[in-house]
Amino acid sequence: MIKSNLIILMLISGIILISCTKQVPLFKGENAFTMLKDQCDLGARVPGSEEIELCRDYIIDRLQKYGADVKQQKFTIEYEGREIPGVNITGSFYPRLSRRILLGAHYDTRPWADKDADENNHNKPVLGANDGASGVAVLLEMGRILAEKMPEEYGVDLVFFDLEDMGTYTEDGGWCQGSKYFAEHWEGDKPEKSIVVDMIGDKDLRIPIEYHSYHNSPLLVREVWDIAWQLGITEFDNRIDNAIDDDHYSLITEGFEAIDIIDFEYDSWHTTHDTPDKCSAASLQKVGQVLVNLIYQK
Ligand SMILES: [Zn+2]
Image (cartoon, rainbow, N blue to C red; front, side):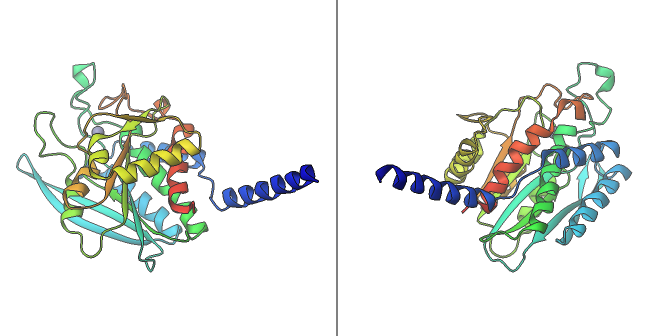
């Protein structure tokens, strides 16, 4: 009697477990990896270039196919006496839901491969398979999922920042111009949670906790890293690491609850070697699934 009750109990809890996990859609790393390669096929997406315009069209086209409400935020910055145009793109899903999650990534790539071992390459642009395309790819695959299934609690805004990667290493000013403009011109209620993903395609993935994220939003960091651990994704490392001036910091400065998911240990960073062969569908899948669970898990 006890035994059979136990078996019934196990069966019921098994069914509950299956039905719970069934509610969370599957993030397809292969889809995201294809979109990473598509972006690289356009060439380097340097601000103001023809290639970045093609990339913008690519992002907007996808978002519209997924039924998102698409907005472009145009602005210009001055760099060494030149006016450089920038466009932030937002794809909003379920705009009537008042509780919002913002997912962000930059889509521009750095004009100078100035960390390349070969000095002759220092004025060549970075292809940005990891530094640029990986975050965009994860957001776009999220768009596919959002189109197929409405989350119960949250509407989601996918934000593609321009002009992240034009700074110099000796001063803070030049970096993250798109997200700065975006955050400074935000109107209305802020999203409950904002998460930036950057450089998350590295085959050799390890994501420590970025310092500003932990300092600003420890609960959101805990929530995201706990989800990763529940899923067995141990690449999310519980150690707190360097402070990184990335797009999330522009949001933090303007009072957003924002964190960054970033793997900053990447040998090909700001070199001509930041190409798709250094990235993997498996890494995109891991980060993407954590975000899917954050949005859909009850
Ligand atoms: Zn960069």
